[in-house]
Image 1 (cartoon, rainbow, N blue to C red):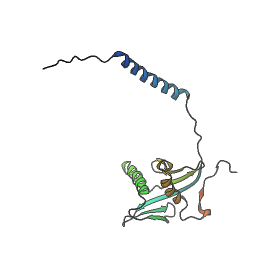
Image 2: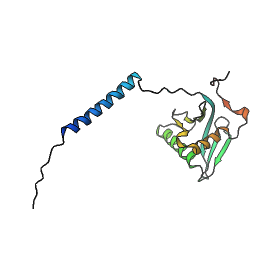
Image 3: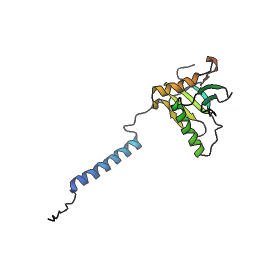
Image 4: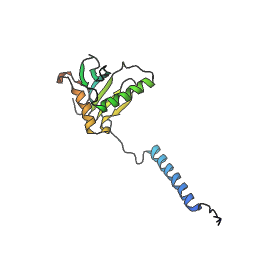
Length: 164
């Protein structure tokens, strides 16, 4: 009852075809990279508003958001709320810790002229595009841009497109 199965080698045609496909893909990617063929140019956006913020964990489990310069509390997130803000800030704080950086440097919330909103860690230079997490999460940070401020208090960036 023993059957002897003979092994057949893998056909060479499909193997050569797969190898040619890989080489062609790499060659086309290289040509595109070095010549710019197929690249889509993206205009650089200009910052319209910025706000320097600090985030502090409190003993009761809440997270306080402070104006970086004045250290004025502009928002307090109670324990168990705003998990997105907590998660983003913990990730950025962990990155600072791994690099041996302290928490003195503020985070910069930036609104761009194309209506994007970014959070930049001024200590590491790392920048998060908040729209990638969805409109609901974006709105949480958008509220921080204006929380506790009068219109005259906004830090406006000069040289905005279309302004004099």
